[in-house]
Image (tube, rainbow, N blue to C red; front, side, top):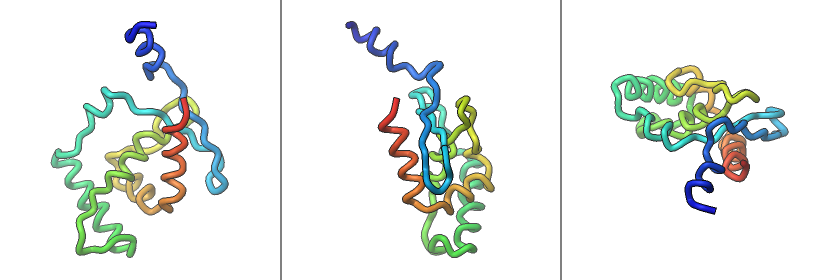
Length: 122
């Protein structure tokens, strides 16, 4: 099998999301992120910097993080990119402060177990 043929098999185009069953949340669907989506990520724009500041302030006010340390909220934004419905449509918006705050306040064990399952599947 040629490399091209192997890559055609691993292409994410048209691939369904992976179903992950959790005790706490029931069924959660996660999708893999393509190379093109990684390339498209916006981490340095003024919009993202403002989002990080707003969510960071909310997390500090809620006592979730140390207000004297910087919060990048990268993990919560990453979870927003991959948690989806069974059709592959994202459930959360990585540019929405309420969505990112909600994901950032979830137990690490739950989010990380869902993300681990995504990586082990497909």
